[in-house]
Length: 276
Image 1 (tube, rainbow, N blue to C red):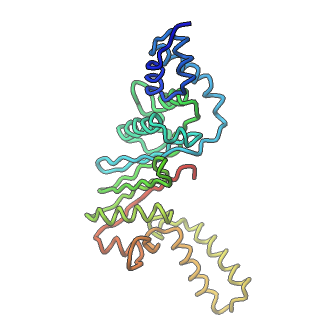
Image 2: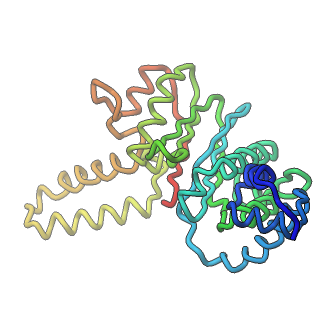
Image 3: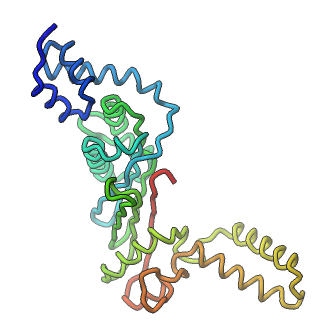
């Protein structure tokens, strides 16, 4: 059995993020050759990737990048918070999103096929999954195209990387207000920018529900139209960004009024929360 120095074990751990025992055993098998030990760990890890396919991956991070005319955001997930805060996992997210931005990918399928380090993003993720010993999944990719963009990343725990991310596309010059709107979205979780974007079928369904509720409460027939419209407006305030009260506005104005006062128009947004 070849003697293995602690310095070599430390170097291997720092390069791969692997455990101490796994690193030592790989170095022993490789007779002290670090590059060979890396391949041994990679191969052993790849054998276990398929077995990990059914494991739940609900930890991880969100990352975002701005480029000319667009902002891109990803959700990269793993199995445990231990790996989520691992420097190797965070570095992987940086490499992955840079490749996705370079490829102008806007879907998970396009992102996984994007070139990265002579392979594809999918191949690199598989390799890193083998090394880190957990299932790693590129769960979401969002790309918002607009004349200007704003990005907000929120840490739900100071010990973890960002868990909630928002990208906002807008027209105008009010960068500070755009950022405040991104922060609002991270909290309020709207679905649409304007009321016009809400599918008619969803509105009809909500109208049917609130009508039945109002009738069951014994509301007067003559008052039903006004009551139903009031409850529909409450529904729109839940799902439409522009009609929500801005969480950070001292005057408690709607988001669309705050944006208009700053001379900006929100054209689109995306929100990701790890595991949601």
